[in-house]
Amino acid sequence: MSFTAEWLAMREPYDTQSRSRALVDRLASVTAFRSALTILDLGSGTGSMMRHLAPHLRPPQHWLLADHDASLLALAEPPGLAVTAETRVVDLVLDLDELPWETVDLVTASALLDLVSAHWLDQLLERCLAANAGLYAALNYDGRIAWAPAHADDEWITGCFNRHQTTDKGFGPALGPACAERAADLYRHATWLVETASSDWRLTPSDTDFQRALIDDITGAAMAIEGAQQSRITEWQTWRLEAVADGRSHLTMGHTDVLALPAELGR
Ligand SMILES: C[S@@+](CC[C@H](N)C(=O)[O-])C[C@H]1O[C@@H](n2cnc3c(N)ncnc32)[C@H](O)[C@@H]1O
View 1: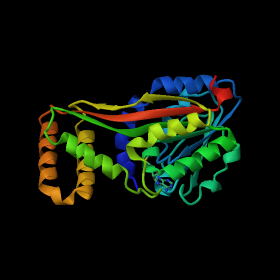
View 2: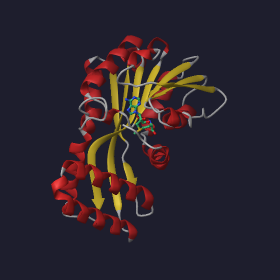
View 3: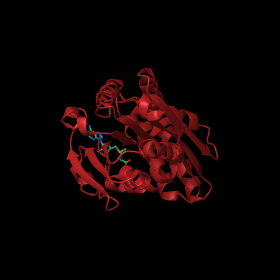
View 4: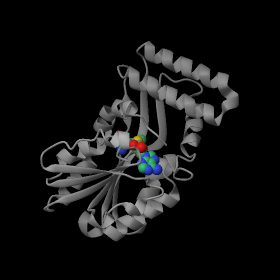
C-alpha cells in the first residue's frame, strides 16, 4: 500500500500531539541506563516516529528506518547531532529477515500495525523475542470514530470504514481496529510487560484540511465496501463537508499506543 509524502506531512502534527506522553516517558526511563540505543523503525515513511521520539530518549541513538517506499525515506533527516540514521528500502512482507535484528534494542512503528495481518504480527513477535528488543507501536487505529454534530449514518459509515480496514493492505487480511489489542495480548502471553494508552486524534472546527481529507478517505473506503449505496454515502460526505465548511465539525478518531518490554527491562 502506498502513502504520499503530502498525506504523511498533513497528519504529522496531529500524530505528534496525540501519541501518549506517558508511554514515551516510560520508554525514556527504562532505556536511560543504556550507553547507546539502536532503534529499528518499521514503515518509517518520512521519519515521523524518529522526529517525535528521538528528542525524548538519551543519545547516542542510531535509527534504522525501514520502508518499501524509497521516495519517502529520502525525506527522513535525523533531528540532532547525537542521532544518526540510515534507511533501508525493504518490503516488510517479503524481506523481514533482511533487517539486522541482532543489533536492535528497540522496535518502533507508527500507524503501521492496523495494516498488518495476524500472521505478520506473530512474525514480528518472534523477532522481538529473539533480539530481546522492546516494541513501541503508536497510533494504531482502534475503530472508534465520533463526530459532532451527529448524522444519522455516522455509525453505518464507521462500520463500512472498519470493514475496509480489515481488507488486505499487502500483509494479508489486515488486523485493522483489532491490532492494538491483539499486539498487547501477544506480548503479554510471552510474559512481557505491556502498557497501552489512547492516542486519539481530537479535531476541532479549525482543523479543516485534515477533517476534509479524512472525510474523503472514509468515503472512499465506504464506497469500496458498499458500492451499491453510492448515493447514501455521497449524501453523508456532502453533509459532513458542509459541517466542516460551516466551522462546526468536531471529530475524534480513536488510536491506541502499545509499549511492550521484556520483563527484566520493564520492571
Ligand atoms: C500510515 S504510513 C505511516 C508512516 C510513518 N510511520 C508515519 O507515522 O508517518 C505506513 C507506512 O508503511 C509503509 N509500508 C506499507 N506497506 C509496507 C511494506 N509491505 N513494506 C514496507 N513498508 C510498507 C508505507 O510506505 C508507509 O510509509
